[in-house]
Length: 78
Image (cartoon, rainbow, N blue to C red; front, side, top):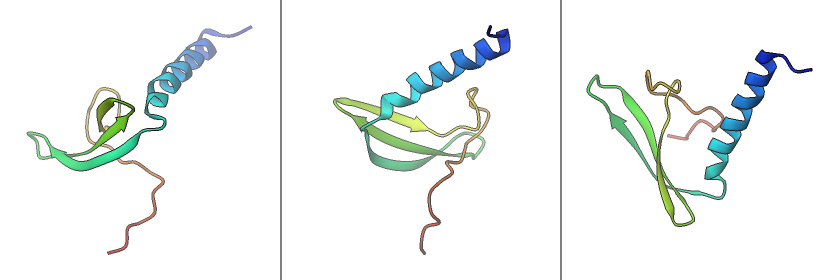
């Protein structure tokens, strides 16, 4: 038997999996820092997947309360 909380987590996992896997096979074609009216700099990528082009901004949460950070890359050499 699945609790309501477990069911919600399963539904969230399915949503995020379907949402993010749209980018599989894509190529990052561009990167910019997009500045908003408060001076926040949003990491913004242009990703090409097949014949579609997506502009991806990294946010700290789904509501867009602030720019985010993508972990997992090595530190760039100067």
